[in-house]
Length: 235
Image (tube, rainbow, N blue to C red; front, side, top):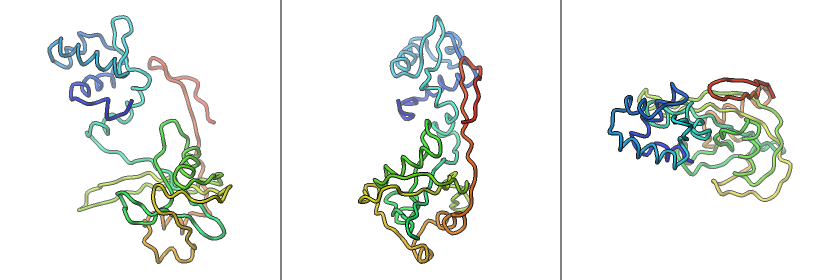
């Protein structure tokens, strides 16, 4: 299931929005809130069940576990608001050189940047970093440290057009096989000449100022069932 497939119509989005405040709803409760004909509502509910968004329990509709993953980001998905994107950027340093990637896509197309990518829902920051290294360079890495967390905002005409929460981590290469430049040109740069390159400014600042710092990332998890939270633990 993808986010884009969940809200292919305004009706689906309105139905889903009801579950932000309710864990289960009966047909007549949804009908009263949405205000559409019952046969039209029945069609949309059946399609949402077919697509794995809703499930039927007795005479009530509930979100599936997969659909529950959309609750924290629902407003962002349907365009009501925006939120900064959590991203891992990795300092891969070997013999006083750092590995950068030349971006092929916007934002920052044409700039050299730290190897990075979005954190997936099921990942810790550390797991995301190792996956991104493998995926974008073909190398295997080992985490050294989480060095900084930076909230980056990009303005255009005094309006924020992009926002990222950057988790800056340092990693060691455990194998030096040939680089796989599927996502963009990869190149090792001497740290001494980086200031003369076209590097994403925030990445250059992190490289210059936070390579020897350290920040702790605490991973925690808990269970949720029928609106009740339990079994909180720090990993």
